[in-house]
Length: 433
Picture 1 (tube, rainbow, N blue to C red):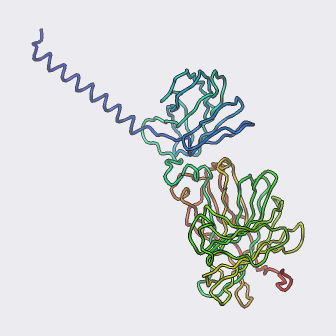
Picture 2 (picture 1 turned 45 degrees about the vertical axis):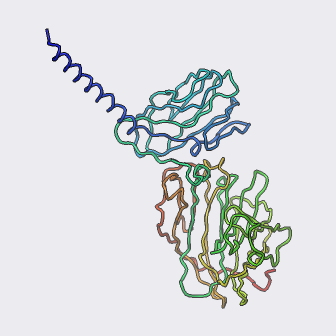
Picture 3 (picture 1 turned 60 degrees about the vertical axis):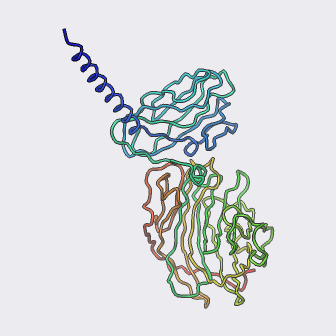
């Protein structure tokens, strides 16, 4: 028989070994488990009634026809184990979890909360979409879910909206905003910017803003505001930095000088503040629209901004508005275009726009064609939280694309060129209103 000292030593050794395995397992799980918060990465993709998805996750799932999709991007194809992090479950339910053609039914009991195992699934390289469907429920909701946890062996890196610092769940669900900054000589007093824009048919979901003519102090483009309303929007920021229009001192407010027929004018806030104008006009995807705007100092310490829109359906230039910006002495600076989505619930939908035949005219009326642009993105794009963005040159035109969780991203800060056409804009400035 072994002596008491030897037996005691063996017990200590086995405890240490088992303890090492135990703690190694805990450490390994911590190192190889990735949490995907639903608040910044989830969309209701089916259902006639709107459920609630907010920063805390899926907080309403009452209807059997409601489905949700959670998106993230993987750098490798890999087998993973998936768990759901539930908020307290009111009643029993069955839900279906699917990924890349694989499905698992998950039984939930009243009172369940915390981590609930789903099972093993296979990720593909690129964007993955986990679908959640309701099968049966006893309570008011199928489930309220805070996050997904993806456990794996070896190396795995995922791109998704990782945190809600600075309200990134909101911006992440809207999707990455992307821009084209047109190269302009550093010397010269440039007054006019001309651009042509075409939104392809089917690439114009609700919430899209296709901005054609940007400048240092504002922007001019077209929006899809609802299924029944579209707008031509022209806005100028106040020199007073605030998100609240009411805080702007009187001597720094944007002043309306003139506006076109049926154009609404007022103030805007939340993303800076200033003067806003828009014309409700049902522009048509697939048609090419022309944009012309000017920036010119008035010689009294102010600058005048004016915008005109040409619709092929009408065949003439329409005045949108003309604003005076106080405490400003600028010519046209930073001609650019951008594409954004302003409705978080439609950030999973793809949108695309083409820009063509860009020209600048100086104060003497001399035209210069712009054939080079830099492609950039917003904070969500720069952090790699969303990588469904593209832009540059295609078929001789500049373009921008975002949303839809496509895989072929364009490198940020990259330079792009289009072939010059030599097609100078034919504009009778004397006939502009």
